[in-house]
Length: 474
Image 1 (spheres, rainbow, N blue to C red):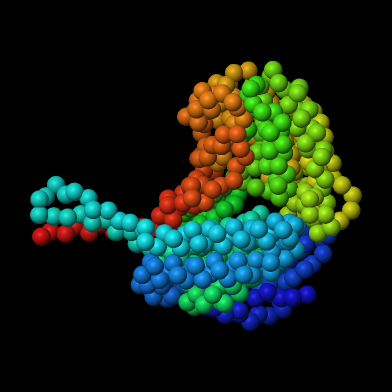
Image 2: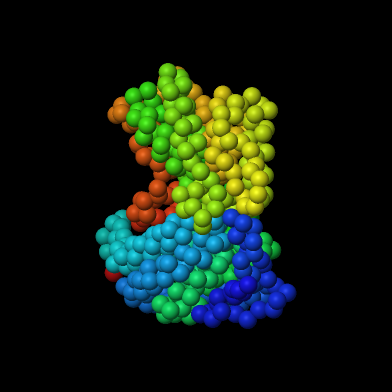
């Protein structure tokens, strides 16, 4: 079994066998690797190294930093097959999906490299005639990046690329469920010849993560994770008043109107719900269908869901793969059982399969109510609760009656309905006649408990900067 070592200052660190975390394949529950568990001393050293590296990195011109990112993007694309194989093994994804994720990571790295000549300040008119107000955009310093398990390769580059182009350095904590791909990326960083100390990657437990996040030289913490994890980050950020950027839970509502293309809506909603076994922050989590078409649409959903096979993707790539671990599967199944006890009707799925692997079948629950846990709490698995509505105003009210506000969507051929929802939905993203996909030139920001700050696009890049106002009297 291979051992992955932490990556600090462009070196893979030596480790003792007593400080290792075992990584399992969720498809068959077999151990596939061991990774170094960083100590508090390791993390303190990594942050100090990143802080020193940042003093030089920030003095490079943005176009020089952009050239480094382009070399990294090329190296990621070159090593996409290798990284994809590693990611597939630790995540249960198909090799094709894992390889494609690496290519998307290369794409978003190139995208942020292209901001090199577009990081702009402002000249602001002064009230005094012999004075200029100059607003500069400056790096924050060291950024702590906390990466989730569900899209660990793409999310890692989604965070470090904008941090680097704006002159910051990073210390990265990958998920302990999927850390091996992060160290494959570290090898790409080494081969792309990024300056030492600019990117540092360490696996760690919660206590050591707190040490990283509360280090006085960490100026920003960025997380993609649960609401609970977001609250912890906010606690950590209070210690040194560090900036926080949080993408947290989601509970995407899908509204289906009577004039919608029902075949397309059913097919795409099921794709959203079953991609990566529903482990996607913007996956459809609740469906509001007009009462006049509920019977027909629910039948279409049932047919689509039951056409999805699940099992080992290494054996059949078209399968829906496993959940990340057994705790995730048990939590989801218990939510389904509580929903049934509370009056929901199980239309399909809803059982724990026999055998190895953390699999769960595509599941539909009908006759759900707005106050049910299954409607109010994030499922993060292949379970779809269905509700009905009478008017578009009621659909908007139900969709907004929620703690989350990450993504939302509607299927309709009625322009007025689409625009009415677009202007009233309480979510950071709204998709019309398509499922969420987070275009990286947009801005992925959650409302309510779905987060603070955001990723992607110009605004996501600028989140990694702070301003300095220069008042120039002449």
